[in-house]
Length: 234
Image 1: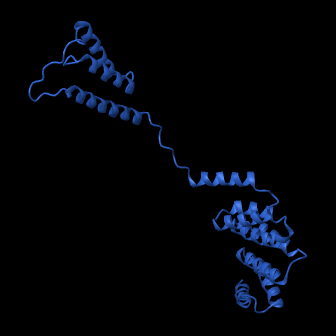
Image 2: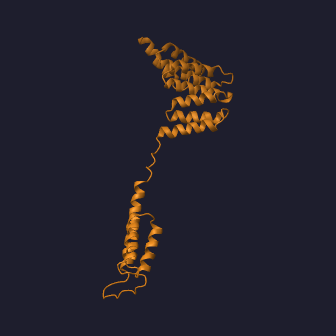
Image 3: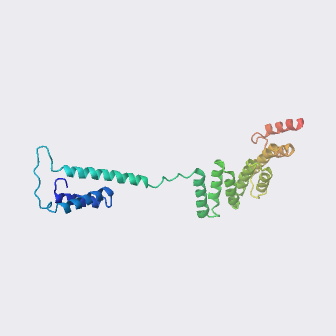
C-alpha cells in the first residue's frame, strides 16, 4: 500500500483474510486499503515506483509475514485461554469402585472359582468386607465350602466379630467331606479364637482335641503348656 502497488496489496490482503478471517488487525488494513483506493483510483494502473539504492520491493511482503506471525501467536494465546481444563486423575477408591461395578456386571454368581480368588485377593489387600462378600458367594460350591468357611472365620475374627468367626468354623466342621487335616486346622483356628477372647477353657479343649488326634501337630504341645500356665494363674 505504501508503494502504491495495488495488485500485490490486494493479493496479500486476500491471503490474510483467508488465513485469519475477522481478525481486527486484518480488517483494519483492509479498510485502510479500501480508503486508499478511493482516494487514489489510479493506483492499480500506476507504474511501480523507482527503487533507490538500499530499498527493497519486498519490504511490505516482509511486513506481511511479520503480521502473519503475530496473528498466529495471538491465535495460539487465544487457544490457550479457551483450552479445556486438565482432567483430574481418578482416586484409587474411584478406580476400585469402577472395578467392583465391572465385576458385578460381568461375573456370574455361579463362577465360584473366580469369586473365591477375588476373596483371597481382597483379603490380602486388607479389603475385609469385600473379601467376606466374595467368600459368602463362593461357599455355595460344596467343593469350596470348607476353605470358604475357614477364610470367613479369619475375616470375621479380623473384624473383631469372634461369634461370627466361630459360627463359620463350626459350619465347616459339620461338613461330611471334612478330611482329618482340615478338621485339625479348624480346631487350631478355634483354639486361637477362644484364646484371643479370653475363653481359656474352650481354647484348652480345642488344643487338647488336636493333641489327642496328633501330638505332633504344629506347636500344639507348647500351646497346651501355655494355656495350663495361664489357667493356673487365673
